[in-house]
Length: 455
Image (cartoon, rainbow, N blue to C red):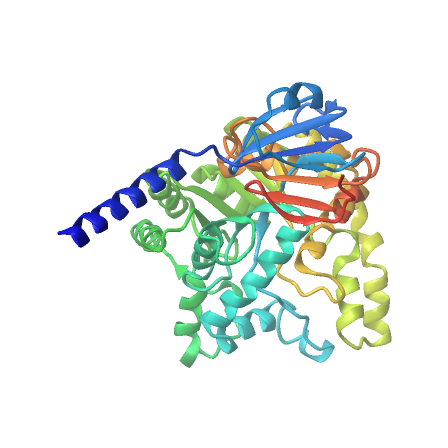
């Protein structure tokens, strides 16, 4: 009996101690900096302080105000004269893909993208792809991207598995919206496949649809794997997804409260996405002024992907393959050839009033750069195409958060939102390339990177 009483007493003490731990104050963190830039308004708070409790922002204001009633044991990060910003959002990325360009002799036989995609699907196991994704995710986070929307090329459930591993703290990375497999019409990316083996390979990456009934089934199949957003590939080669099928996809997704992102570059594909009621149109390079106005009126987001602005592909070619004099000459002139088109595209977007965000569309291997550093090249690309710095900042923070449907969680440094912060040494409005040199990263109130002197 004495032993039983002792056991019951110890159990009671353990329960009480657990209750006390549960009732103990949430850990608090104070981040101070010379400036805090609000992308939504363009206003700057100087100096600035952000109080964080747990994973959420508790208070934002002048240091004298925020420090007046700090919880006991608050840890402080004083970032000196740095500029604080919300964590960046990559609205369109491919974290489980790291494509290298083929040799010049192979380019006439395939698209430059296809061999790398085939290798990713056919030569790597699902486990290898997820481990690659874990590396890419960590590198994106370290460059300041605290949220990312992964839009395909992740196998059947690679990006949702990576998302769950990040959310549970097993691996570091941005919070991810996973799309699972793309919905597409038959054909498309894998035109050169041997028909005898095409089926199983295609099924790793895509869900093929030809009718509204198949469209609804494929949406439901993706939902089974707990995806966050549906990705659709629209096409205009005569066998692409038509408006009734696109409408069925979007209706089924919306019934489950999921947004739909539509890959559409040509005018016909863009119109199909508009008529079907897409939530966002990815790329949209050939959108007419009339289509931009339709998107504005319907509240459809344009997700700009300036991946190949500024001669990106030429730099990849130069670093990865041996080029003939002819190809080298063509690549050297690529930047100047497309710059007028890029400038016109950005000018028309800004003039139209359409809502827009930006994604890196990064699934390419860029020698000498991490995935995050490669993704950050979009900032100078947009600047050179004529987008003002404040609009660029909005496109990767407040605008992107709204496009994702996460404006209540991320995209701004405000009370109640996740404590996702970055800091740069200079002023990104004066020089947007400061975002290529992020020196402080915090996600969920936890410091991921701190290269600034703190005191």
